[in-house]
Image (cartoon, rainbow, N blue to C red; front, side, top):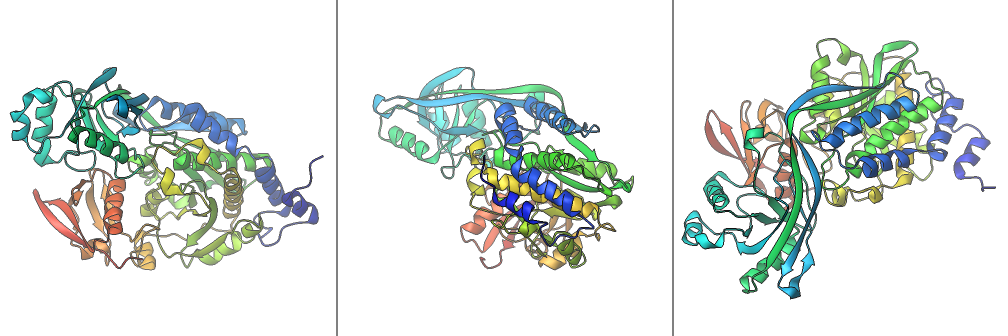
Length: 559
C-alpha cells in the first residue's frame, strides 16, 4: 500500500479554502486537483510530442503530423468536435534530417563538432570534406587567390550574425561561384540558437550551407589555420526543401458551455517549434499543459457555463502567424467580442504562478482565482496589478481586438534562456512536478473564468501602454510599435520609447546596429543584447520614403 500523499491527505481532510464554490464547486475542484496531481498524463503528452514526433517547424511534415496528433488526443479525451483549421499555405516547406560534422585533420585535432544551420537553409550534398580557409577581407583579396576556394570550407563571419550584409554580398556571390563547400561562422556563446527565414521561393532556394559552429570550436579551427596546420573538416547536413503549397494548421477543441455556448475562454499555447532540438520548453511544455488541462476537465465531468476552447497555434515562431490569422478571420463576425480571456502558456517548464490584470479585471480575477495558492503549498500563486506586458506570444494577437490576453507568470528553478531555441531544448529539460502544477492551475482557472457572471472587462493596447509606462517584460522595456509582415511600422504608441526615438508609422525596420531584422524576435533579441552590453543609445536603421535612415533608441537606465 502506498503512503498517502500530501494531496490525498488534504482531500480527505475536507475542501480547500479560498476559491468561490459558485464558480468551481468544491467537489469538482477536488476532482480536478486529484486528476491533475495524482493521475497526470502531462509527461506522457510531452514525451509523445517531443520524442515521438520531434521538432515541429511550421511548414514541415512534423508540424502537420503534430496537428493531427493533437486533434486525436483531444478526441481521445471525449472532445468530439476537435479539428484542425488551415490558416495558410506556404510556397516552400522544410525538413531537417540528421546532421554531423568533424575535424578530420590534423590527427591531433580530430573531434566531433557542435553546430547548427538555419531552417530553410541548404544542406550538404552528402558527406562533404575539405580544407578550412579563412574568409578573405575583401572581394579583391578573394580574386587575388582563386586557387584557395574550390572545395574549401570558408571560416569567418561575413556581415551580421549568420548573415551577409549588402556591402559584402558580392564577396559571398564570388566565393559561391568559385566552388566553395560552405561557410562556417561562430556562435556568440556556447548556446547554438536556431532560427530561419521561410520567405523563399522554390526557384531561389539557398544552395550553399552556412554553418554556425560553437564558438570555442570555431576558435580552435581558426588557430589551426593561422598556425599553418591545414585543418580539414567534414560535414553531413541533411536539410531538405519541400515544394509547396504547404498547409499550416491550428488545432481547436471545445468543451461546450451549458448556458452561454457562444462565449469562450481560450486556453492555449503554440504547437510549432524551431528544429535545432525537439522543442520541449518552447513550446512542448505549453502544448502538453493545454492538452492535460482539457483531459483533466473532461475526466472531472465539468459543465462550464461558457465554452472552454483549447487552441494550439502554429507559425508562432515566425511572428504569431497562426493566432493572428485566427483573429483576423473572426474580427468581422463578432467572435472577438465574446471571448472572456485568452490564457497562454509559453514560458517554459517553470510552474504557472500568477497573472497580471488591469484595474477593472483585478478584483474579479483575484476573487475567481483565490485559493490557487493552496492547490499545493510548495507553489505560489497570485493575481497582481499589470506592471509590464509580456509580448511575443499568441495572447498578444488578441490585444488589438480588445480581447483580454494573459501570459502566465512562471516561477521555478529551470533556466529558460539555456533551453530557449537552443540545442538543449529536449525532453529531459522539462520538470514533471511543475508541469502537473501548471496543468492543474490552468484547468481550475479556465473553469472559474468560464463560470463568471459576465465576460471579463475589455482591454486595449493604449490602456496597457498607460498602465505599464512603456515597460516590457522580464527582458527590458516595451518598444511601443505595432508591426506587420515585412517589419513595417503600422502604429507607434504615444509616449513610448519608439516615439521618443523617432520611429514613425510607415518605417520599415532594417537593422539594429549591424544585426539584420526580419522578425519581431530578431528585433527583441537585437535590442536586448545591445542593452546587455550597456549601450545607452542603440543604432536603429529604418527605410523611410525609400531612403535608409539611422535613429537612436535612447535606452532607460538598466534595471
